[in-house]
Image 1: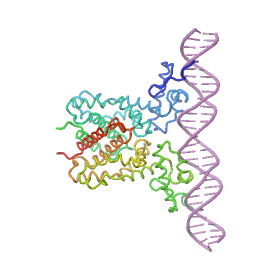
Image 2 (image 1 turned 90 degrees about the horizontal axis):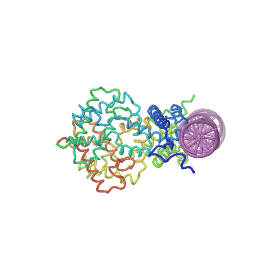
Image 3 (image 1 turned 135 degrees about the vertical axis):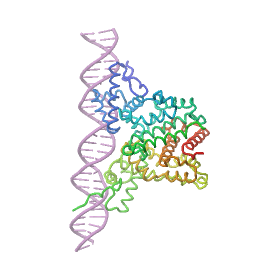
Image 4 (image 1 turned 180 degrees about the horizontal axis):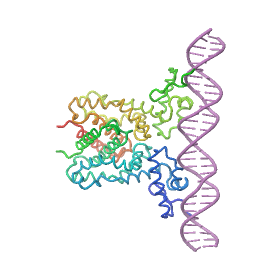
Length: 227
Length: 227
DNA sequence: CCTCTTATTTGACCGGAAGTCAGAGAATGA
DNA sequence: TCATTCTCTGACTTCCGGTCAAATAAGAGG
């Protein structure tokens, strides 16, 4: 008597019963290839068969590891999100300057990091803006559960330093930071999402710096400790 | 010698050369049906053939009026966005109470309006979260050009009343209002997008009210006139 | 009212991609 | 070495966006 052909699902992905090192490597390779292709071609543009070919497996194997294209994308999204630094991984001298210095640091640095390796960023972008609502729900839950950018700890850091107000529910503050940082960075980095604020390419660096100043100022007004 | 089979595109949609009333009515009917189906089934779930059938035309005709599924969606999105009230269409007594009263009014009322007719809301939601980047660009431009919710005029209203700070570029303030209002309302109304703040269904009304209070307070901190 | 011309509409058809599954193949245990 | 159990393969099915040649409707001119 056999149990099931494939073991019960492990959170999202199907995991082989005999989880050999070779199979784990395969799964990782599939996700790696998928991430790059999603980044390069967008969700619709990716062909599962092409991902399989490049990962050196047959199409059917991909559907063995992930139960749908959505599932494969979600795995790529999680991998991408986990690959980013958290707020508190800023350099010590920046941390020493406090909460809003860290905010500024990441807004200024993120474009450079993305320039160096835009693949994970692009995949998270697709996940945040270009996925079905069903997928969105899973992404929202993932972000809430894993907090991959460490926003909660970061806000706590700000509170501990007396820089962040405490008269508002901390979860509200965390969400606000998440929302605004996402939008701001997306507008800076991705032309399609910029409502003319940062002028992705054309605008002068001074103007961009000024906008970043103003953004930090707005955020400080919203969540800074009351004086 | 003929000109073209179909006239040059009118912004986004293709418009028949002989634009009879019947054809305009057809086009509107197609958009109307499409909007409802997108709302009910999501972008992927919609079958163009089904839209055509329900609108009483052949599939080919749909591709005569709109050059792709994306184009049809965009038309539905624009129609949906235009159907909403702008900020300054709040009742006079609310307007009299000032900028942040209007903010609060819409956050509190929107769920009711959506409950009455969720179709346009759902379509804008899909456009904001679940479309290709290419479509996103067109949506961003549309929102910037038409400002269908009148955010610019609304912020100016706040400035004129001395309630909104003027030490920050007004476009920055406008974007911030857009961003935060969207996210807040989406979190309230759409479970998939709520990071546990409003608890879409289950949470107590008092808790929700308190969260709304806090949200308005945060917004006031960010963009309220400096005291 | 009829005919000719031009624009529109139709729906069978095409290409291509997600997902399936029966059989081949690899790994494990006796 | 053989038997058993799980995994991998890739041809196949199904479904859908988009095309296009043929049919049809709408003027224009007589």
